[in-house]
Amino acid sequence: MQLDPSDMTAIINRTKRAAGHLAKVIRMMEEGNDCEDVLTQLAAVSRALDKTGFALVATGLQQCLAEGDGLDSVDVKKMEKLFLSLA
Image 1 (tube, rainbow, N blue to C red):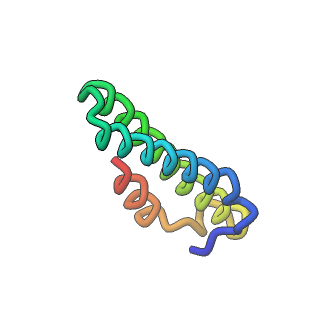
Image 2 (cartoon, helix red, strand yellow):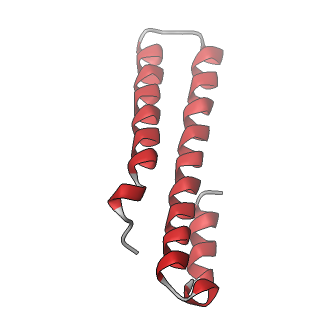
C-alpha cells in the first residue's frame, strides 16, 4: 500500500525527533554516561519508535478505509500482521 505523502508529515517529524534522541543516546554512551541514564533514554527512544510504527499502521488503515469499500476492502490478516510486527 502506498501512503499519501501529505498524511505522512506528522509521522516523518516524529521519526526525525526519535532519530535525534537516538543520536543523543549514542553521544551519552560515547561520553561514558551513567548506565541507568543511558537506558532510560534508550527506553524513551524505543517507545517513540513504537508509537511511530502504530501511527504509520493506523494511517495506512485509515487510507484503506477511505479509498476502499469500508471494512470489506481491508486485508484483515495483513493488518493484523503489521500490528503484531510492532509487538
